[in-house]
Length: 141
Image 1 (cartoon, one colour):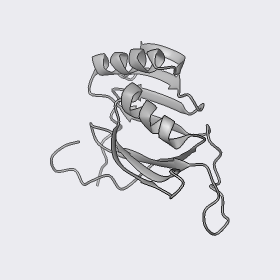
Image 2 (cartoon, rainbow, N blue to C red; image 1 turned 180 degrees about the vertical axis):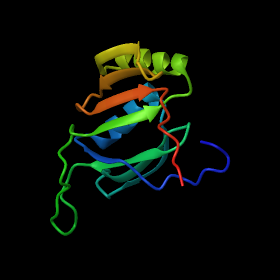
Image 3 (tube, helix red, strand yellow; image 1 turned 90 degrees about the vertical axis):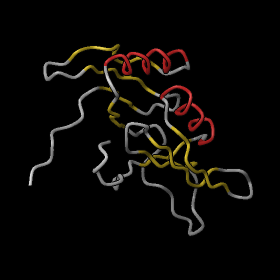
């Protein structure tokens, strides 16, 4: 993230069957940094935030009914996200580390026709993760 970029204000969110295990996987396999995890008296993770070191982050929690009886509308394992890597070597490193940690490889590192170096894996709960060097098109206006 550039020095003059605002802090992230869009937080992709997901629910997990085992939030604590998924957080630990994201930290060790993908390289996220756990910034906070709020747990209930029963130890269940109700809300956690993980920072992506190049910028941005995600929020997640254990799949459960909340105090009002509402349930999160997306089932565990239905999330998909793209995370920008520092460079091609970082993409390759994440892919190898994730597969070694138990992620299912979907697409080994490859180069796209638009100049990105990407890879795709499914995390242990079935969420679809793509990592690559494409930072998105600059905003105009």
